[in-house]
Image (cartoon, rainbow, N blue to C red):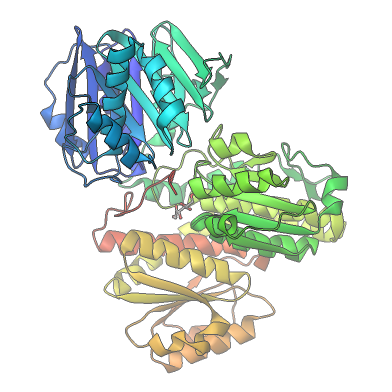
Length: 611
Ligand code: F6R
């Protein structure tokens, strides 16, 4: 979604702003722009389309040490030059960029028009900047005072804001409510961004603004204040700022790098967490004692998209190993159905970005009703990571490609660790615990083995890339794998894909299964294998091409399936982590064959910070 970058300091601002926007590109956007303050005036360039369209407009040298930049994902108004951010007031005295959505924009627009503003765009952001300029002029306020007054008195909605004004040429003003803003602390320079990636080349020292906070940055430092103008003395935290994590590592796509990084990233997720002494796992940050774990009566996992699918797999693992009833639900649906919050339920929020609005809103609803939420998050210091009652970081490193791969796998890794911990506290024996630790420990190596199957998977993807529709099927532990496989295929290749429990096919979807619909069947060796092979027979009888993913040597599978992708044998509980990788490669090569924009699929954003 939208991205913000801001800089004030001793260096030239424009190249830092455009480089920051480049880092933010992965979030998805449809226009971009910058404003710099220079000799008591503001200079703005903005353009619909990709960043190169903006860069083509910029003069060779722009002399300015302070400015703001933005990548916009259209909400209010089409992706045009006019609607691109930054927005300025009609006298060009203030420039402002904004992420989020203002809900009472009609009322605010009316006030701006009544006060004499002429609006040139369709955006909510322009209304804010016009109102700010009017207030500054009328009441002789500083930019910070005017912004505080406007937000406090009149603005309803979500925002991350950065603004500059021509008469405070080295000052940047920030505000946050529901949309991330992070300050980057430098030596004689200060930055701000909506995402750590845009700060990583400059500093590792950061300060996360909380909702309801504003900040003023000058090259000499920063001051964070509340809506009531009280100082909140925030100390910077250090983050892992290795900027190489944000490049493609020599590959054509971030997605490819992230798929192939998984043996390493999953190993990092598991590192130091396998407790072979007691045949259990260790999870610091849980904020739960064994006695709390013993009291649990239910586990409810919440997330969106791929995080929800990881949650479904995690619920299976937890219920299976701990015998605590567990399920997963879409965070947005949960929140709006007036859920019953129980004291002995462990609520788990799953999120790569830690900023997904719907997940965050569900967390707040649970906490408001007195529930305990455990966060499983990748992005260190993100809003969800800061707001939950206990947390486990995934340590997968920054995920840049819009489609989740390594974070999804690490989510499963953390859920498996948690399932073993709950299981060993409640139900499973030390022997089974030891066996599960070994199984989990061997998963990164088994993922490496799946990655060597790439040539076969690529050939299969090329064969079926003309398909208009594909089905993914699996049972129990394999069903969430099928869901995520369908999700990956549809989002990056745009081939329509549906996932079903294999048992459900005959209750409807079989009507659509023909020779034109490839079916991908996920067949882990398990007690249910024979039944799943029965479903394979059903599909084949309708003439559909079948791609089987299996670790079983069942003869019938090779007789029936058109293609068999073999994965190393593993406990069905962790097999999803391994088979999922084969499906990621299948989606990746389908998308590449079709010439899709693999890292930034149409209509999708990396971090969905709006409802
Ligand atoms: C799919 C994908 C999305 C995210 C979803 C939740 O590949 O990336 O479905 O999984 O938007 O995002 P996070 O995990 O950041 O909360």
